[in-house]
Every structure is written in C-alpha cells, then in structure tokens.
Image 1 (tube, rainbow, N blue to C red):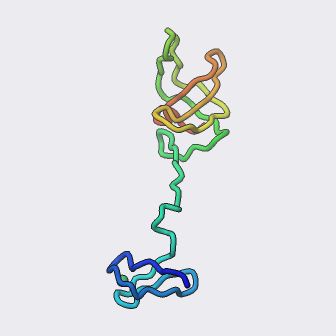
Image 2 (spheres, helix red, strand yellow):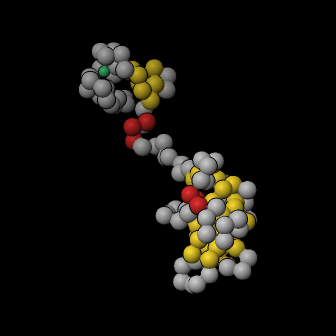
Image 3 (cartoon, helix red, strand yellow):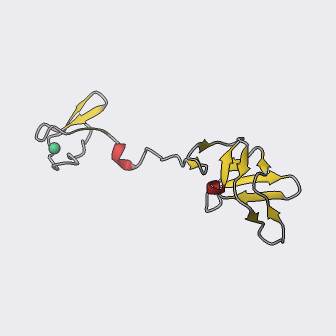
Length: 113
Ligand SMILES: [Zn+2]
C-alpha cells in the first residue's frame, strides 16, 4: 500500500487519492503528488530592451555603443547581430559579429531585429 503524504496545508494524515490528485478531507486542499518536489523547472526567459522575448537564432540590433572587452573597438549602435544563442549568466547572449568574432552581449542592450 502506498504511503500518502500529509496535507501540505494542515498536515492532516487523512489524505486520499482522487485520480492524479491528492485531496485533504479536513481542509479541502487539493494538490498533485510530486508537485512540491520542484519538478516544474522554470525556463529562463531572455528579453530585449523592449521586453520582447528572445530566442536562439534570432537577429538583434545593438541599441547602444558598447565597448568590446579587451580591445579598443566599440560595437556601434545599430550593429546587426545574426543568429544569437542564449546562454546563462550576466551576458546572456552569445553571438558572432562580423569584424569582431565571438562576443557576449547583454540582452538589455539589444532590440529584436
Ligand atoms: Zn488539509
């Protein structure tokens, strides 16, 4: 026989299964078994300066002159960047720019093209 978890709301031990759901007869709480184990992995959403959601493969335009780390070059406002790749971290866009090579950008400094 399966051990049913106690009610997460009132800790009642009288929970019972109702299909895929668990129900507490004491406080009326209903929930899905396993839902509290962090199964619902949150997908990170990366947005551009206007709040549009960016996806892998999108093209964006730089909206601000950006200094290129480790060089004296400046990535000019209006530079088009093709085929971006979203990554984890402070600079959440990985891309290749003609004349610059592989770069990392912050999504707050680009606009979806
Ligand atoms: Zn309860």
